[in-house]
Amino acid sequence: MERIYIAALFCVLLGGCASTSDDGETAVASNGDEELVCEYYKPTGSHVKKRFCVTKSQKEAQRIKEERDMRNLENQRTLKN
Image 1: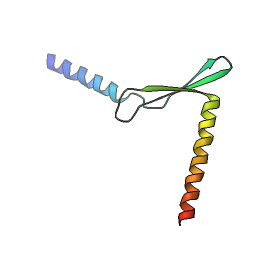
Image 2 (image 1 turned 90 degrees about the vertical axis):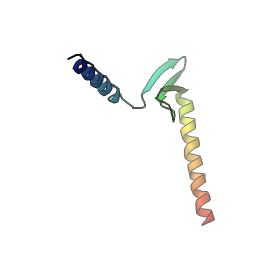
Image 3 (image 1 turned 30 degrees about the horizontal axis):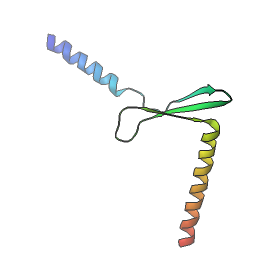
């Protein structure tokens, strides 16, 4: 009888671990004039979430830089062909 309880408890705990959310949650915090935007992510090879915080202006500058880099990469590909 005790084994049944232990097996049931194990199944419940295992099911709870499998159902945890894996979303990249975003939190906003105020830092004087600038608002910080914090995102949680799991680095490759790790199950521990890390928090990465930047200001909205830094996030926008990063987005613009990434778009420019993608355009440059696409232009390089078309020039070589």
